[in-house]
Length: 350
Ligand code: FES
Ligand SMILES: [Fe+2]
Image (cartoon, rainbow, N blue to C red; front, side, top):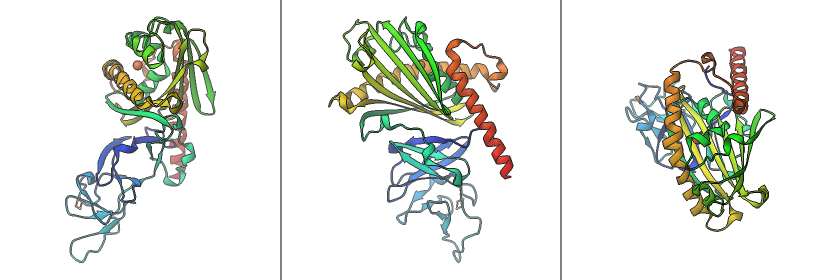
């Protein structure tokens, strides 16, 4: 097994799955079809008909609430059981069923479980209440990246890169002198970074309500949960004023491996409702402002790293480790341990 199976993985933003449509998505090297029943409940099935292996997402949602294969018309219920065979006497072959994956929808995010279904515990889903549109102004985006998902978590857990990779938008010359601390809470890693007395870019000043050129302090707190679900809480205030005098923006960065070398990347900007009624417009503008550096600076760098690494295992390349890597290394070790643990559990059950 290549991936951790004792964790929930993001499968989609809630609004990516709509009633009446079938969405294919490959997650953890497995083809899934995502859809909603007529009650609005989201479901995920293996996207492969057990008859002649046609992709089920090419089929239809029927009025009866079943998923009909496009090739010979077998129909499956939301749990993957074949419930209708239009041919001959209509008998349903015993093995005519497809795997269904437990899904939970929370805070506008659809989470999927790839381990043993009876072990799926929704209490283990990381909390993204900061970015729930019911209580915050939220704007969401998606990118598809041709790089390994753990390189993505390295990228967010080590934000020292913003000084060099994003000098005109997110970084400043003061980032490399930030104070950082890494804190472990259970199996959650926090990397807290404080930058004092920087001169924010126009993008930062605008979004944090500061006058252009005004010196500022910034706090960047990144939370990591296995396998690759991160939340960044950024606060900025006038230099010396204190964190609670500034605005905080919550930015989920959630990655799910599509394959070993490609990744689904969902991110969002969330502004507190307490910040005022124009929060939705500000969240929309902020996420659009992030899309530019993420898509034109991070993504090409991640893809170029992956290209240079090829198929090699990360540790086999003996990466140089710096102080700024502490959180990312901690997360990698925790993930490796979890994958080993999950492998052992599977071997014991076999
Ligand atoms: S391949 Fe699906 S019904 Fe034949
Ligand atoms: Fe970046």
